[in-house]
Structure formats: structure tokens, C-alpha cells
Length: 465
Ligand code: FAD
Ligand code: NAI
Image (cartoon, rainbow, N blue to C red):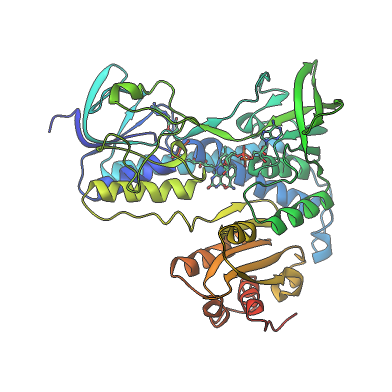
């Protein structure tokens, strides 16, 4: 094979693309990955999951020390100061070590990084920087970018998107978050913990669309207790910059009188849209749907059988782990193996404190699909470890089918819900009943015992409530 010919060319090196490329190479396929950024890893490693979690961790440590929470443990501090530059340096260090880790893994697995923007010349040929590369198979993993709010200009100083909101050089006194979804609550938490007064403006009547109703309500209650102002059923009509401030005109979502809010910073986070601009999909015989996504079948094949698409650019939740699993499956299918992703069991986690997590059906969805359900709930207040750690907020909710007892969904709010939800996902992947979870021995004292107790509550027999 010539140097410019490959079994697989992956376009995009986010968690979908880089994982697909590594798996394809591991399976003996000559593989290249096209990436236009200076570093590998896509949104997730450069401006998404990783930098946001670095700031969430650092800001939580600051708040614990600053709020006196550490003092309650007998850890006294004095002369406490916020060094935001050092916090940003830690964020950048995390990005650097992980993105260079992917470059190392590419070398180790002999994945060639084609640096530059990729676009189709035809269904088997990709142009990168003026060179035409031939591919037997192509995986489109171009991800997504920030959805703009019509009429609003992101200036990255006062009117921010999620990327500039990660990079603020100073803590704003007041911040408005437009969109009470995952990014708004995570990055809103970062700046609130560091001292900003944060107001969330959400169009719908509740924050966190897609999550279980009880979880959404309880999350709002907890976040308000932490100091968030949450204005639901409210839309932003305009955002104007006046000097160093932003002035927002907000009005009831159902229509009505507008009112003005002034803030030092506004973060627009109303969702993300797939990246297909400049790919010249038409030259490969492909098109996007109304939402700008590339439609695929069960095997991640587009309308052109040797062209696959995965991750944020295809329909489904925009999550790194979903993209990764699709990347592995697509590579395995190309290699002639059976690649499968169970889209019914994709966990989602919001990394606030406490964390909010879920997998499977919400109670509302389960009922809408005609299931008669049995529900078991267990409050974190009654979990010995959470109580010891002074983390009383939240609960675990197990939703099971009333007839078969099969677990349909698990939702929770708990300090380590992001870790606890893996157990629920594994149980559901294996078709567990609530009884299976209830009779599985869980280590004591752990937060995970709350999952067992919630499953026992489905049976009507929890011990600690
Ligand atoms: P991406 O990660 O978007 O990568 C696509 C890559 O393709 C990019 O690097 C882009 O430069 C490149 N590219 C695009 N077009 C071309 C082209 N034509 N030629 C060459 N290169 C191209 N998800 C989670 O699961 N957990 C989290 O905690 C989490 N936190 C997030 C926090 C923030 C602030 C944001 C914005 C997102 C977060 N996400 C999180 C979502 C997650 O980042 C995405 O779901 C994930 O990155 C999608 O992976 P992907 O491989 O589909 O695409
Ligand atoms: P989102 O879809 O989670 O939330 C957007 C919110 O904005 C919704 O509640 C929506 O109702 C609201 N909204 C839409 N238009 C509005 C308007 N004009 N005015 C007021 N509110 C409006 O999108 P978000 O937070 O931007 O995140 C994008 C994607 O990134 C999500 O799909 C998410 O899955 C992913 N992500 C995942 C994370 C995680 O897994 N922890 C962390 C951050 C992002």
C-alpha cells in the first residue's frame, strides 16, 4: 500500500475518533486519523470533559476550604487565597498530559496523524492540506461545536461560550448562564464556588432536560441551596454588551413583559451542533438530516456503506463515552468482527456537587412506554458513608418493571454518583432484576450501599429506612 493509502481514515480525533483509530490499528488495519487542532483528543480533552473537571475539582477544594467546611473536619486554614492563575495552570497541565498521551498511543499503535482539515474529494478520497489520501473505509468523527443563540455575538470577554468560560482570567462578580443543562450547571458551579453570583436562565419549566423528573426537581433544590438563582420558563430575548457588562433582556417563555438583567459575564450554553461544515459530504454522496447530523444504521454505516459515522456528529446523546464505544464498535465492524453498542444503557453524569447521574429510562419514559413500574428510593442521608462524610444530599432511585422486576432505569444524586452509576449500567447490561442488585453483597461503608438499599426498597424491604 502506498504511503497515502489506508484501510481506514478517521476524520476527527475526539474520544470517538481517536479510540476508533487505535482499535482499527490494533486489529491490523492500516489507519490514519485526520485532526485540524494542534493537539489530539477533540472537544473532550481540549475544551470539554477534562478542563471542566479540572476546574470543578479545584473550585470544590477552594470552596471547601473557604466556606469553613474543612474547618468542621478539624482542618484549619488561615491566609486562604484564590490563585486563579495556578488553577488554570493545573487545567492546562491536565489537557497537556492527556492530549500528549493520545499522541503517544498513536505512535505506539502506528496510527498516522494527518494534520489539517479533512474534506471529501470523493467517497474514497480525503484531501488534507492539498494531499489526496485514499481510504477503503472512512469513519467520520468530527464531533460538535457550541450552538449559537440567534442574534447574540460571543465576544469571549463578557459574552462567553463554554470554551471562553473555562478560561476567564478573573472571577466575575455576577454571571448569567443561558441554558440550565449540563454545561451551565457544571461551569456555573465552578464560578459560583469561586465567588460569582450565578443566575441560570432556562427556557423549559425545569433544568436538566432528559433526566428523571424527581432528580431534576431535587437537583434544582440543592443547587438553589448552594446559592444558584434558577429562573425557569424564561427566555433570553437579547444580550447586549455595555462596556464591561452584559445587559440581557429576559422574558417569560410563554410571552410577557421583558425585564433586564445586568451581569459581568454571560455564558451561552444552549446545546451543541454537529460539525460537518467544510467536509464536502456531497462529494461522498452524503447529506445531513434536519438537525445537521449524519444518519447511520445500527452498524454506524452512513448511506454509503464503507463510510461510517460516530459520536456527536450522529444522533444520540452527545457524550464522550458514547462516542468511544461507537468508535470501538465501528472499527470492529470494519475489521469483520461484531461491534455493538447498547444505546439503551448509556449512563449520563452531571459533575456538580453532589453529582447527578442516571442510566436507562426515567420514570416518566418508562410509564410512557407502557411499563407498570415499581420504584425503590433510598436517601443518601441514611447511607452511613455519606453521613460520615457530611454529604447528606440526594437519593438513589431504582425503577423496575412491576411484572418482571427487570431494572429499567437508575437515577441518583450523590457526591460520587458518577462512579456509583457504573454499577447500575453493568447490572442493566446483564439484564438484572432489582432483586439481583438487592442480593449482591456491597462493601461497607460505601456510597454504593445506597444502590443496594434502593433495590431492596423496590422489594419493600430496605434495612436503613
Ligand atoms: P469531538 O470531541 O468534538 O472531536 C471532534 C474532533 O474532530 C475535533 O477535535 C475537531 O477539531 C475535529 N474535526 C472536526 N472536523 C474536522 C475536519 N473536517 N478535519 C479534521 N478534523 C476535524 N461528555 C462526557 O461524556 N462527559 C463530560 O464530562 C463532558 N464534559 C463536557 C464539557 C464541556 C464544556 C463540553 C463542551 C463537552 C463535554 N462533554 C462531556 C461532551 C464531549 O466532549 C463530547 O460528547 C465528545 O467530545 C464527543 O466526541 P467526538 O469524538 O464525537 O467529537
Ligand atoms: P444541554 O442540552 O445539556 O442544555 C441546554 C439547555 O439550554 C437546555 O436545558 C435547554 O432547554 C436550554 N435552552 C435552549 N435554548 C434556550 C434559550 N434560548 N434560553 C434559555 N435556555 C435555553 O446543552 P449544554 O449544556 O450546552 O451541553 C451540550 C452537550 O454537551 C450536552 O448534550 C451534554 O451531553 C454535553 N456535555 C456533557 C457533560 C457531561 O456529560 N457531564 C458536561 C458538559 C456537556
